Length: 270
Length: 304
Image: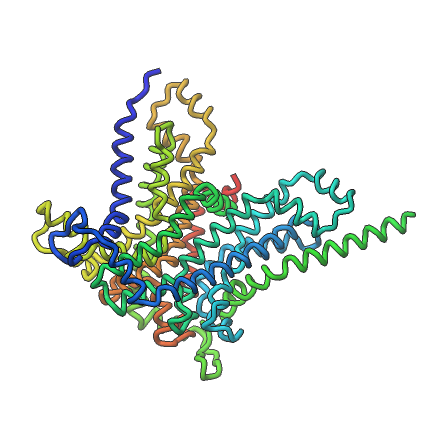
């Protein structure tokens, strides 16, 4: 059979790739430029590139503080997710009355976008008395329905005979979970960690609402604050952008497969 | 003997139920506090006049009357939200074209896929700042290209322009979400059985018809999913708008979600913001139902 040549497709995809990469290049270039970033025409290649802008970030704003807050909130969200989602996922593999209703409840909760509930969610958080704390920022992120279902599917895939054998050997329920179920669910755990990391690292609207003081703000809020306080007059803003994007990008590129699988399995189950 | 067995069975069953309840409790608490309770409270709030310092009073549909009859900003935000959602099929079509290109046995398809997808997991606030800079009238890439190629003489102030601002924000949103659409469509494409194409080829069906008769119909669930995500993006694009234009100039890029934020946390009118949220939520439900109808009914088709 005659095959169509592949070069037109390559040419198209290379064009698309370049268009997709230009924004990255432009921001990295700006963050490295030594001259006035508003000079016209802008240079395509940065002139006398240096890293001063990156040093500036540490002096102009409380970058370490923002970073620490982001790390704390993300760590809380990941711990909460692993604990609560594995537990809920395991419970759903059990047969108990009302199981169908619980599944239905989870599925319908999934249809409520969190952004559609911010006003009462704010009031509830204030009623709990935790406004302007790390906990308040992390609370709504502590469990994710998609991941509960990913764990459920993963636990159900563990061969029944293995569990029965373990039970015959006298292993307790806890031991079975810790020694058999969890080690066999490593892909699900990886997916959950990555999804939670990305969501909580990037979250903006919720932290914006529940934090009041600068010492509780996370990196995205720091970015927005930098923009409004110092205006975008300096290359440091773009150095800040690059610094903030690097962790997310690294994690994504390292665990691309788990990330995409998590998103698509969650999406198709929705 | 039998009583022993049943007693054992009952004990085990009670233990199972207790275990399931304990294990489900934390997750259920979170979803009760941050999904179910807020949704109910939000509806309640939208029919009441309330502020943190004043007791609630039932006012019926007063907020909705004010919104529909007297609030021009609401109408502008609603229209902008609809435009925002209405443009997403463009991005989906583009993503479908890319997905078809990289789905084949093209060498290096994985690299192209990664490049197209990389913009999706980025922090949206940072994406907003990047695009703001690209649109900038002095240091921005887009004005630079337009000016040096002689298309415009004077730099265009894209984000300060009433005509361009919304389109510019939508382009930035496309850039971020394109890869996600592509991945969903790719998953859909890969689930289409190859033998259908082979049979069609044997029967001499031309490629165009193969696409229309096999690919598109079987891709419906994926396309439906993309449309739903497009609808949901009108919520999540808050970050982008907040950084790029904050709803301006005037209210040219105001979406319902940014208006809800401003009403609730700018003017502390929580009750009115709740009423706006109800409208946004209903809009979402209605549009999803319509999309579901158009894609051939049965949202359960997601189950493949």
